[in-house]
Image (tube, rainbow, N blue to C red; front, side, top):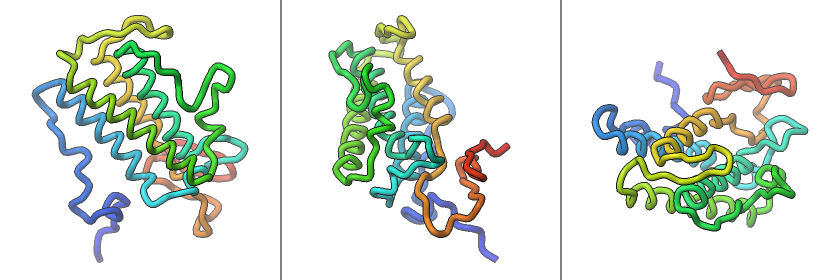
Length: 198
């Protein structure tokens, strides 16, 4: 009897999942960067191979979808690194005061919307990675209207924590799904509800 294939292996073989192989001791910056990078890669991995299915809602009438999550995380990266830490005038791309849930509500199955979301997310992640690399240390500070003064160290920790809590079940619905589906991210969906598996 062979071991069941892990989902991560489906996208590049048994040796392809190197997300969590960074250092576990030593330099704090390197560890924070590697853990956040692993979480970002997890998002890409869980969405790989999906196109318009990314816009499917996990539980109706919720607007929660993987595509909405990608759009939301693009705005989150943009907020912390461009607006707060780099002090740029960089309004959110997918939400606004007038449409605070635009990141999720606007996540439609239009291929242009899907491509735009991934392009925005990759652009914001690239900016964040450059910012972290060029920062003299983790004590670089920025002013946030909500949290007050925050350091780069706090932002990296906060983003890592949020990535862990937002690892959602795959929202794509398919004919193979029965009345209850268990997801590797620790969620079950049954009777129109999503609950964390204990």
